[in-house]
Length: 104
Image (cartoon, rainbow, N blue to C red; front, side):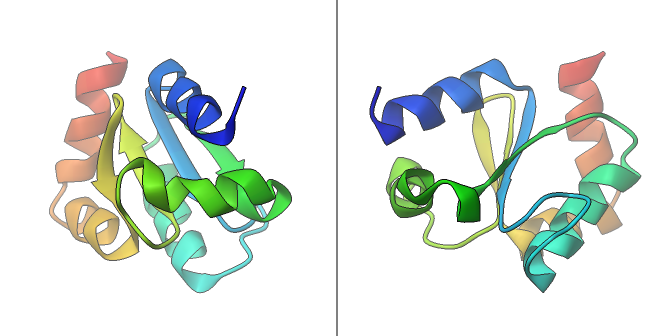
């Protein structure tokens, strides 16, 4: 299975997934740290992929949804965005509503 097929499968099989540098417990960049923290504060489990541990995902994810940077958050198969968008949605209370809509 090539990298784009793996990404597609991951996005389709996880209601909430973040592609990030590092892990939620040990983020490897500030943007990934802030984004995963916003997701954690919503109080729901989410999947993650450490792009630093998978060079094929790292190289191909920007092509998947035409989004060039990391992290990338997907909810219910749709790209939400990166750090700035996720933080903004969280601050407005919209991120939690989006997650609740797909998990309850």
